[in-house]
Image 1 (cartoon, rainbow, N blue to C red):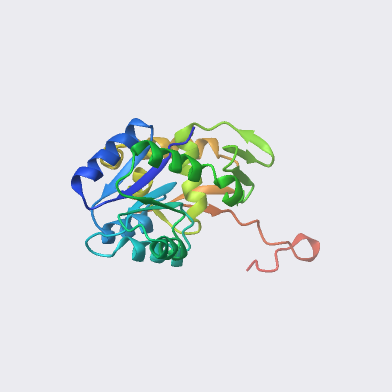
Image 2 (cartoon, one colour):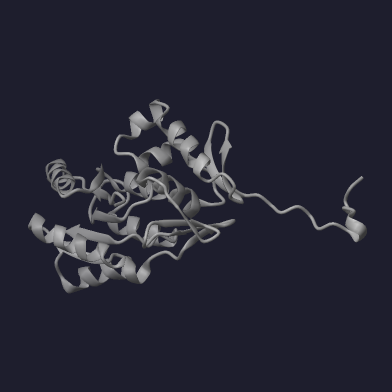
Length: 241
């Protein structure tokens, strides 16, 4: 199963620590930040399955972060945490783009239940099948096919390929790959881990019309090999010198 990655944005260090520990014990991969500016930077840089967002934080308030994320086109499920419990506050948070609302103080068990409910929603909002050349990846089944033939990839290789497909035609930086695919971002970036997995992925995609292209000093992207131009009359290439 692919890792479920969460972003937690909470300025209270005690609560942030409690949330991080509880979520990790529940099997989630967690990035925790203390202010709204860092939260927005993480949302622009990394892919998350859900976000736990405090309303009041240094820098950009949580509500502004939610609005900015929605303007960027992000559909990531967001739970707002706040001590504001009036109906008007809840309406404001939901209208800004939050998916759920939890009033402080709350029980961790309730937060976990609400997260599970949000993470079940992708059956409705799931991204469509991802394609490049003759490759077809279905996020719902985690199956990759080439010309309809099922390819056998490891969970890590699938995670790499999915990120490249979702970001195409953009280049995905090595650090972005490390943060989204491995638990230990620093170890992945500082060793040859990424290179080894990329080499294995390329070998398994050999023969496909889509391939992983290295942008030296930056990262990787998926490109498609264009078919040769059609030949002119009598089999002569009209563009040939």
